[in-house]
Length: 256
Image (cartoon, rainbow, N blue to C red; front, side, top):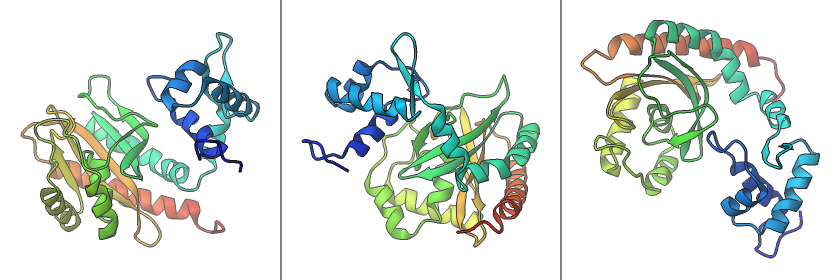
């Protein structure tokens, strides 16, 4: 792949263009994309033309761009997130029916947690997680419950990146986070009170694969009140076990 004068390949610049879109800015002009990526408008136009011809972005009549359907086709073929989502779907519904707030699935993506599915009640408490969007792993229950089982060197890399507090309850001290991660491994779940929003509590358990590896997290977002977390943890752990069983059946026999 040819490299640009800035030392970045055309592929990396194309990925930057795709990353420019988010859940709020689903339609962007070429100029807006250029501003978000820091690339010249001329090269942005050229790459947008190539991405459009490949179906990775789509151009609207008003000359704005959006992510293309071909990206969804690719993600649907993924045995990771897509397979986990398929296995989790019926059990996520059951969890949501019991909790009647928010129930969601998240996977680690670098130092963040990426949410791949969510069910929410109309009158549920506030929830900052959005399907297809990220939160810092150390602030989210879905992220922390996965970081807890990472090798120590990976944990330290995430801790070294630092964390900006979302609320006064957000734990940002690395030594306290390490202690928290040890508690999560011992208990098999995490309950964060007011980490992302003071009015909510995030409760999460890990989702495990064939070899007991952690594939993602199943979590609920509920009011941050005096209600015991035990009943929610039981519901989550039972659902997680069923999801792991169904994921194994879904992916068994696939070539590696």
